[in-house]
Image 1: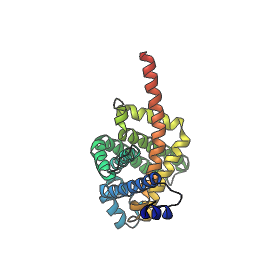
Image 2 (image 1 turned 45 degrees about the vertical axis):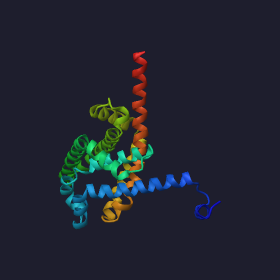
Image 3 (image 1 turned 90 degrees about the horizontal axis):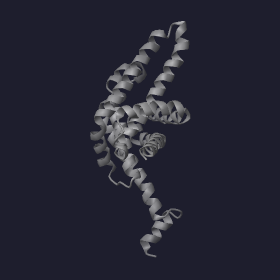
Image 4 (image 1 turned 120 degrees about the vertical axis):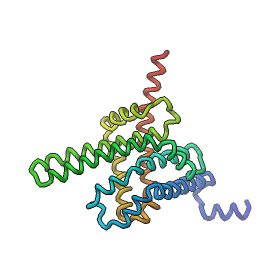
Length: 242
């Protein structure tokens, strides 16, 4: 055994070289995705640093957040490439950004419009007796839409494996899957809430440290749910052709 190999084994006694490469690859991908997302959402990051109370200015943040959905889709594309053995997460992120920009932007704008409508309704009914009954319903609808949007973004980012699936079909499948597998939807929603909490608590270091691991959990969860559904549909279609 050479001196270099001996030092490697002494530093990581329970980790083989392939295992070390795998861990390093995930860490490198996570850091790259964090940096790319901060750059892609630079106006939003700057506003979070400058605005003292983002919760009070939530309509303004909705107006400057159209880049969030494309950046999430690009992050998912980088994760997909990393799972396939890719070693260039920076390149894969921006390649995914260009490829997913238009459909992801539509998904993001639709979700932001719904969030704005829900926020206005909550503010208008806050002082009324009906507000206590209406608020939970509106929040559930918004959470349902957000989780469905994440599934659609996952499908957009990984559509190379199923190029015949349209965005409209992805949207319909996502709504159905969120209603059917609501427990997994709660997991996705929890990871998104955690990522937002990181960013709001630390607008500078949060995006650079805590976003990518939570997004990877949301991506893996959504990929498994959406992949099983699309795979079942593909098998049904093949059986029907036979």
